Image (tube, rainbow over all chains, first blue to last red; front, top):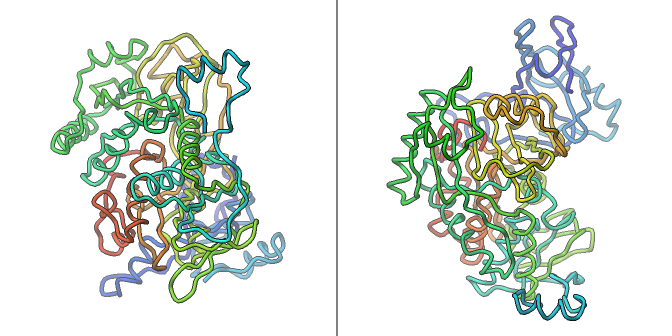
Length: 107
Length: 415
């Protein structure tokens, strides 16, 4: 079973305690934005086979949203980090590189 | 190809079954084809079959990285139905269901289509209203479904508990000509028919890249070398995003795991398919006597073909409540498949940014039932370069234009 460490309360939460929120770091495009940008924000997903950044909510714990880096090909968890960031932090990228030296972030 | 018939069986019985020929050939790849289809699952093989049968294009290769029918075609719960709410879905799935009716004769291969009847239980008042609406929509669409009362449900499914403690059965959406088929046989039957038309099925041949020039595909790089083509069809379900990336475009798709399981075989106890969407489980009995069980998807991206144990637990808890007699049943096998989910839970049968490249994906959790209709529509799209009436609404530009075919709300469940 998938277990993630909640970066706020420090609990190792198992999957049943968490609500998945899919891809992290989406750039919001609001009213007035070009159709391309809005379509991309709403629907286009990276869906990588490999390292992936995701939103998770510690629903049956502290209730807060946090982010996780996880490998979709092996289910390995690289680490979790707080959600108040606009992109992957240097710390989490280092954790992925430690396990996947060839990994490059996609645009 | 040896034609299968009662006379062939009698002839072979007299000579110790030495005369059967191979069902399909395993040729070496040619340098180029008129059309290449990536993915030898049900949808890919059906596309190839209807390209040949309906459009006369037989210089075709179907490329498969594993073995044919080894992905979701061999991993589903074999349910066939067409009781969809939206008009484009009902048309496409009903086309598929009606093709299933005569598929065994058409392919000269027994796909064991069993229109045994299918029930979708309504267990909340919201569901009652939703399914009545679907019955009315189906009436207008020409899809034969009906609303049935709890007493009739009990009559059709004697083992069901209609007075469940949490969610009593309030009625059901019943499609009498829904049912099941033998999933492997569907892939095998199409493969045999394709091979018979001279098409090449190239197994153990993984696509590593898509080569294009001036906005048109020229061929694919594979583990068995470069193969040229005039047209390319991408029909790879779970890995659609990966192949689309090779071709240089992105899809509105996320890949997640969906699990299924079967019990030990027991005596015949249920001769219809039952889906219970509020509690999230569905069940039918195979010809071998196993109870075939499916549930919901996991909620995160996953390419491993295995899912979370908690979903099995959730599904079985729901089904034990609905069918108390299965509480001591042992489960024999469990497996997962990678399903490609779109935002509106409807498939994509579409042109792509590359002029002669087409994609068929996004069937999510409900692809098996659609195989013949999907192949029919995709073949028309590939042959003519533009979608016919069946595929027209399923282009991926619908996400940009806001023309969703919203079955996620309609079904209220992964379907």
